[in-house]
Image (cartoon, rainbow, N blue to C red; front, side):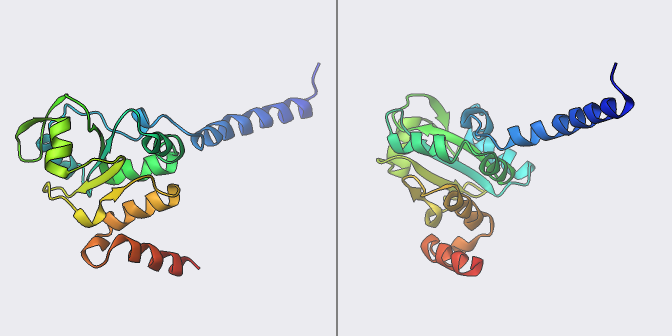
Amino acid sequence: MATRAEFLLRLSLTVVLAFSLPALASDRPRDPATHFFDDTFWDFSEELANARDQGKAGILLMFEMDECPFCHRMKQTVLNQPDVQAYFREHFINLPIDIEGDVEMVDFQGRTTSMKDFSVKQYRVRATPVFAFFDTDGRYIKRARYTGATRDKEEFLLLGRYVVEKAYLKEPFARYKRRMKKQAR
């Protein structure tokens, strides 16, 4: 028979574990397909309205293709991180675009096209990944376009801040990144 002190110790440990396990699990990598990218019906004019209604900074498109090792690296080391997922879900609607895909979609101007034509003809995407940002009016933020994998999650988060803070109106991303690193020292 356990004493009252043993019982209280076991109860305390159980409570501590119950509250700490979810916190530990929240730092674990999560599938970007369900935790980074948003669900969509591939109508970007509708997604713009959703972004405005939700008070987001805009839409982030990740142009990708299945065989791309850099896309895979981004998904396995950056887009799967809970803090990255939380930040980008808070500020953007995040959508993947297969640059070789024949899936029919509606672009920002309301025209029906395929993912392949949208990628290659409208945005000249040839190498992947390409991260492209659009404001809530559907304007392409060219200065924020990022081709390739970021060095790490910190650089990707910085790219998101660059758009959210509208720093692209004042300076290129490389200069912004240097300035932010100096300020952090």
